[in-house]
Length: 575
Image (cartoon, rainbow, N blue to C red; front, side):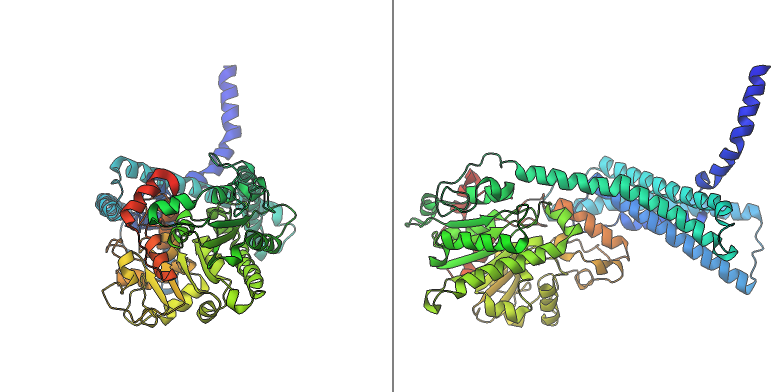
């Protein structure tokens, strides 16, 4: 008897708590569920790259949340209109339930059909990208994981609302009646935001930053200090090997030596110059750029025929194909200068601090330009520029306009340049009417050409011949399925021209634009884009050799297939 009494007492005490959780765990609202289902079908549609399970999960989870909010908003608007017009439904509750069930079943079948269609489209995109086809089980797991993530987010929002309601009795004595709902909701939302920021976001960012700095301090595996005075980090260098950071050590250690170049060209070669400055505590970006320029002077870089200013990614990574192609083509008669401007990996720097990349691009080119200006005009080397991804975004910041770039540099290769880069947008606005945005034609190819493969160095995407290529020459190397190039914030609200045109050879014609959804579909493609083989997505490898040959105005004089054998042997490591 006593046990039953205790049980009844416990039940009475917990009943109010259980009733308080009902708003949190109630069934999905019909309108919100409809919006989530429709958004799921849209999210399963194709984007630029084949999806791994986690990519599907992120797309589905975000899209379901977006669809649920839109569905709820439409339902609220509909109820407001009905109240204003005093329109009432004469349908019985049973009929309404039946119609709701039929509607949800129809949506469920439609979502199943969309999932099967997505598998077919993923196989098509895999073939276009040259990758293994996706597995149905992984996509199904991604769908389930995304739905679970949406469910967790919805519970969090409902719990926040419940918290706001619970705060009303606390707020009402100290706030005007009309402001009580606003104040209580603000406190609840702020509490969740602060907890999320302090317990998740800040800790995660701090942990990633600390880890990046630790990684940077470790010696690059398989690399040793160079002995050649023409390289930074050598005994003759102003910069110690350790100070260069992980990616800087890779840059000065790798690359061809004279014997490697001669083995390909059959001609004597010079020792290529590679100079670099790491990002050190107590040395700002401008001072780092000056250190890199000082290294260039010390190593004799200004006495070479060509100086190449390469802006790397945030953590200091420099595209090996970019630099080594120049070294092979010039027979070593060249100097490459670069620098590190952050410890953060490119993806994290991309999200948190793009301005640093711009500062680095401006500072590095400016420091080199200042050193060259000290030489008599007849003794000045030609100056070429380049960078990939965040490096292209930062490197192009050194120039105020296209005209400024043509005036101050002798040529360059910009790889996977983000479309929101000011100079990219300026060129897009100058494109010849009718030329596709994935490879626009600028002034008939007189100085600037957009290229996705070597054949397009000589003509437009559809075979249109260019006029004679004048100097300086600049190439924007970009693949039609590179999400780093074609993602931009305005995907949230505007359909881009490249989707409307459907001109990209590596892009499915079924790709369409949907507000918000396309924004994160393309964003989620970015991490995988760097893992695919060269010649697709955000992987640019051997195609850079003929590009640099054209920009430098030199006949290659070597068999590309032979060069590929040397590259595969490890003399020219890939990314």
